[in-house]
Length: 263
Image 1 (cartoon, one colour):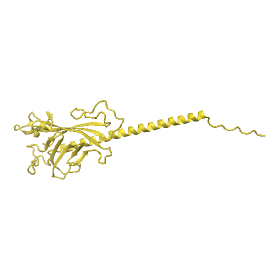
Image 2 (cartoon, rainbow, N blue to C red):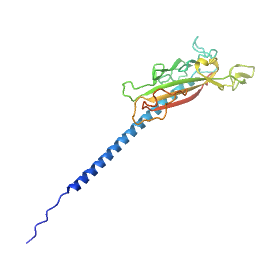
Image 3 (cartoon, rainbow, N blue to C red):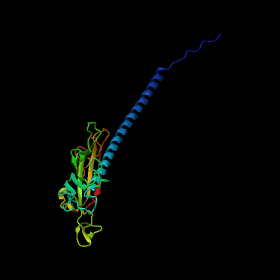
Image 4 (cartoon, helix red, strand yellow):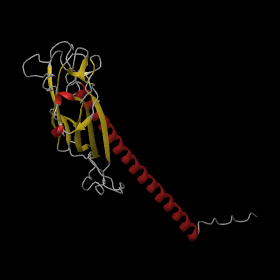
């Protein structure tokens, strides 16, 4: 006669409690990992957007400012119509303030561009003004840097924009390499190298401007609670930006020097 099977036993209460505890620990660890990964991804996205917008703005600034004074042929006058631009009075580059500049040129139809990056029509007379407008950097009516129009918080804010104008004061240099008026039969009055940099209000001789320094301070429109700063962020002049230490936003400064080649 066969013996009855031994009754099967289930988990004890202690075993069940240990299993539940381990499951909760594993779930908590997974949740923390997900939250940490998501926050890292968000910060990386903010940094990437800030870097891309800064590089774009510098690229556009460099291209537009470098076009100042261009004309299709260097032997043709820079006054195709009266009052447009001339080397004599420096209107090809007008330092209107330390936060704005007006650039004039005659397009070649091949390489010259306007504010939106499109090609300027051949032989067209262009006047482009770059300026800070609130938290935007604009060329004409085109926004190069701006907060998100829909208020989503994903845009970039312009905190500071400064321009310094490099003035060439000499010495006289051979005509093949020099700038400015003729000193004599073989020399120009200047050497095409900036000797001093100043803001627009201190620029006494616009015709002697040979280079431009630009500075941008940008910050993310969005915030993140994990962002911590030990000190306030400085603007282009080295002054602390109000509330920048505690606003939970990322900041970055971009600088560049643009040479003027078309005098």
